[in-house]
Length: 241
Image 1 (cartoon, helix red, strand yellow):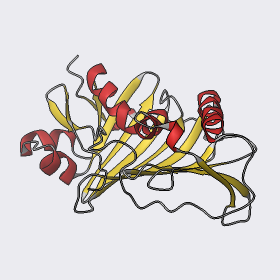
Image 2 (spheres, helix red, strand yellow; image 1 turned 135 degrees about the vertical axis):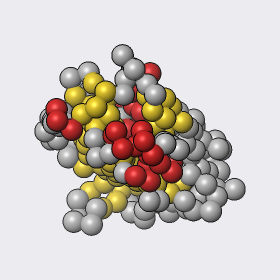
Image 3 (cartoon, helix red, strand yellow; image 1 turned 180 degrees about the horizontal axis):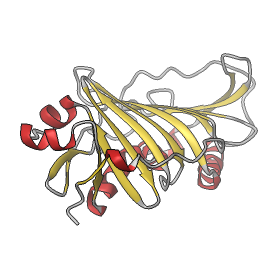
């Protein structure tokens, strides 16, 4: 059975907001589709050391653009999270797409807002027509609990942690050199099955990673500008405060 991630519901004041919170149906190491990149020679540094250096580099990074395509069921349904901003999520814009359901998340100055399309609010979240009309095309300010749950699905560091949390680093024991499409050198770490990390050897930062349930690609490390808060005339308060 292919590894998948699932969605969980969260509440924002009187509004039901699907937070797309990730969870895993299987441990890392299940059969999957990632194919190790072919290259030579082999890096002389152990894979576990390189993964540790990657973690250290991510911890020190300030910002990034990440796209995460998650498989959420066995029929091949996917969820796409496109996030850019601070690695720790303190300033962020993210777009989440699952079928016809689409939502945007904005984080700035300690506040989180969500804006969704009609399918997101009325179908995904079962919001009544009268309540939907109050928030149609608006950014909804959410409370602390809802913001915390949304963080699990949009913060770049959290998306990385979904891949790393059950990772057996000792199983990622194959390393090689590879190249990007434009010819830049990379380091490729894999378990030979469904887990693969592609790193920039100059910075140790990941260019991509997959664990069979999530495929993440990264760019613009330390180069994403601050994301603005939504315009005040498009904001409604759903925080319950």
